[in-house]
Image 1 (tube, rainbow, N blue to C red):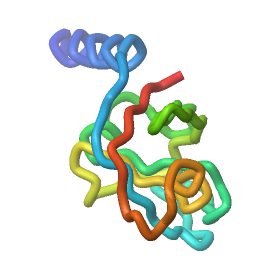
Image 2: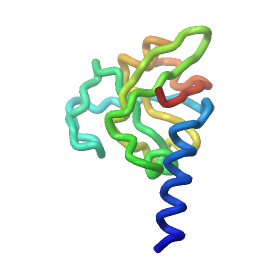
Image 3: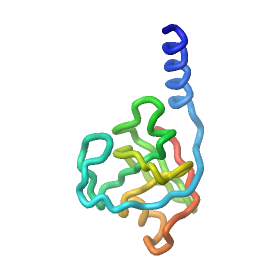
Image 4: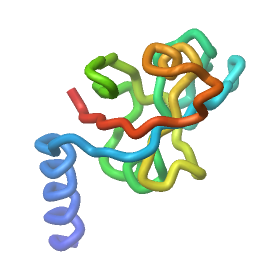
Length: 114
């Protein structure tokens, strides 16, 4: 039991004090589906779906994440998990198009919790 408590505290500290992550950013078209966080996600939202590993650490739902690429940054909200985004993130179309065209398909981004 003590091991579980210590592990939980250490994981929480790692997430809170974490520096930037990096990996591929792709996009998904939720069209109003309810994500893993229990809220409907619209294509026009600035939302992000985290890969399974990052989504499983702490309680990320509703947290703000700053995504950066090409000298630009945008704040998005964690709304879902992305089982196909190993080491990366999935952005809603509005958030993705802030950085690149949908036709590009992906870009190498950095992100961090705010």
